Image 1 (tube, rainbow, N blue to C red):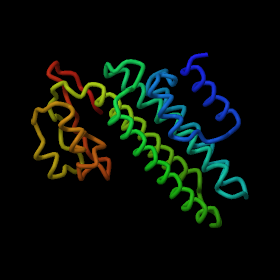
Image 2 (spheres, one colour; image 1 turned 180 degrees about the vertical axis):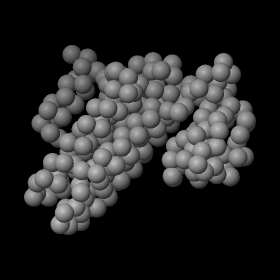
Image 3 (tube, helix red, strand yellow; image 1 turned 90 degrees about the horizontal axis):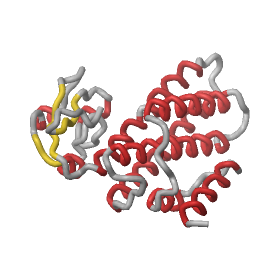
Image 4 (tube, rainbow, N blue to C red; image 1 turned 120 degrees about the horizontal axis):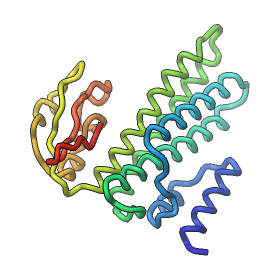
Length: 230
């Protein structure tokens, strides 16, 4: 049995037993191509949305601690966001194996940050579950919409890191709000790596002040006129 097969089987067994796959194991599997990109981003996002909705409903309708559903959410996030990142890498021309240390370091750090956000979400949910007549369905829908939008951020990150040497231009119209950084970057042309290093990749780049409100409507466009972020 090859290393790829061993790692893939190990992850399958852990997930079947309801255990959280440690990032170190997941990253090693990604590095050697044991985890493959599958499906399309729309499908990944839809499946993740359904899973997040189910997990949060289960929590509000149970009387137990946050641990079970929080760990389920962590697993769902790792699967969906890992699949999104892998798909972006493949679509960017990186092939089945992600061997770029910077790309994997970004993935690991960003996934750990997402786990932190999920943990905070459940602290909030625990407080809300104690309120009488709280409309948790509306709250859950809003949270599921927000968390599953992150699949696009991970897809873009994989795509851009696989194609970091191509030239792109910062394009697009101002959204409801447009920050100083976006105004400065309009029509600037650089290699993808230049935008990545500075966290200036729209719409999720943390170097763009407007990313916090999800208002940014700019994107990067290749010299061939192809829009490569959204």
